[in-house]
Length: 347
Image (cartoon, rainbow, N blue to C red):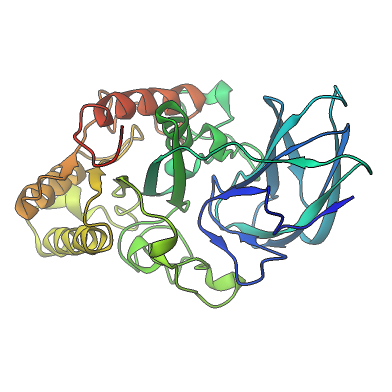
């Protein structure tokens, strides 16, 4: 029996392109579709568009995680077997990676005479994260490299399920939109994303599609999802190609960055008047001047619902991407901090 992507009993989360309701496009990490079904066989239909690396989808079936490798481009059908056919199975299909690819979900199939069961309610808490590869969970599964530089890889170790962002959402029992892209900095012409014509978070933050190698950019309708807590984890890739903040944090380039950072926070505030905005960086090595610049911008805005958080091992834990234990460390600290805040409609 074919299950349309627009079936009323499917649940979605994430900044997804719904311009075609029969082929919703997943762009951002942590975006997912969830279903509850009976029977012992589930088929998933998807269509991939690749930019770089090998591309993988993640899934959780009855609490057990699996991974599916996509074709570089075009349609794929995956058959997944459940162990106990007479029970109601919980299935979640999610995007493991950032806009190194995007895929359209074309629907599912279950055995004849089986059914899709009504979904469980979504959590009432909602968070949104603006960040880079660490927020996306890039290279998170390379657990033999905790505290070390990255191994050679081609996308196989990246898994948004193990990003601090999604671990945090699960700890808080919150929905998540993870606006995270590997290599991205705040401003255009800095960072690694889309070099040599690098695009920054100032370009991406209000978009659905944003990778120019996958087509024209499209705007996001912010009324579709209003978070109560927003995490801004930008400032890690901004030192590329030149770490001007470390060289002269009182200089003209550093001052320009702080002005742009303040403007970015002001745009978020206009978009989400009631949200608590938490500014941070990560455990990945970086010069402390970036955290001082963030702190200065936060103080100057004098917004009681805008704060900075510094992790216990901020900027000093690892030269490589965060692995699962390090992401867990970040999520634990952030969750404890967020629970101390007076956030509207949180409890």
